[in-house]
Amino acid sequence: DQQVKQNSPSLSVQEGRISILNCDYTNSMFDYFLWYKKYPAEGPTFLISISSIKDKNEDGRFTVFLNKSAKHLSLHIVPSQPGDSAVYFCAASAYNAGNMLTFGGGTRLMVKP
Amino acid sequence: DGGITQSPKYLFRKEGQNVTLSCEQNLNHDAMYWYRQDPGQGLRLIYYSQIVNDFQKGDIAEGYSVSREKKESFPLTVTSAQKNPTAFYLCASSGTGVSYGYTFGSGTRLTVV
Image 1 (cartoon, one colour):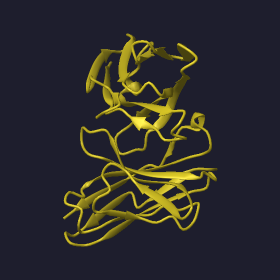
Image 2: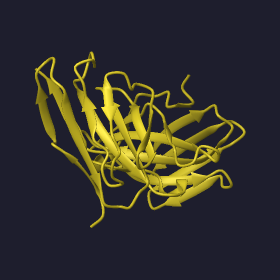
Image 3: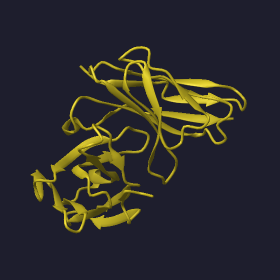
Image 4: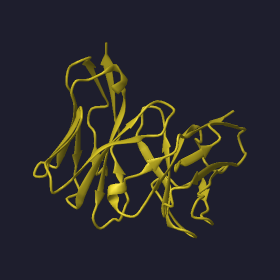
């Protein structure tokens, strides 16, 4: 049973527009969430995170929103750039699971020039 | 510079042979992980180790083995028992506290010929 789901396997966006990547989770114990970005044949790199005590965290063009009641988080990229084309993984951690992360299946973002 | 190094980048193996993938980190992280990624798929956990001389099976441990004799090193052996070993393998490490997230290596592409 997948505890972290990214229901859209791919997303195509025009350069300059907003990209919205979604992630849903089922485990109510999750209290920390992270987004990773991965280029082909490379390891994922950390992008942005959010604690469950917040509902929004912003870092430059990247903003993560958390809706705890809906068990849903989203990553907004504004404006989208061609270099943002990559696979994005959502990950979650529970306070009683130490530093173990549970990953979603990933969403491939394609930003068209 | 601290980091996590996987070698080799590309590896070819004949059917029926065992092969060992190297993962070394100099981040002083306690925990280390091995993931497998197949084309169009997410990250699947093979093995993880929270401390030296101890490791646990992940979701897809069959056909794989690991050792953790040193804090810095977590090699993964793909045995001949692994039915579909061709994949992209990622090693990661994490420190104390979830806010560190994971640091990933750049991956090893294993191809069985």
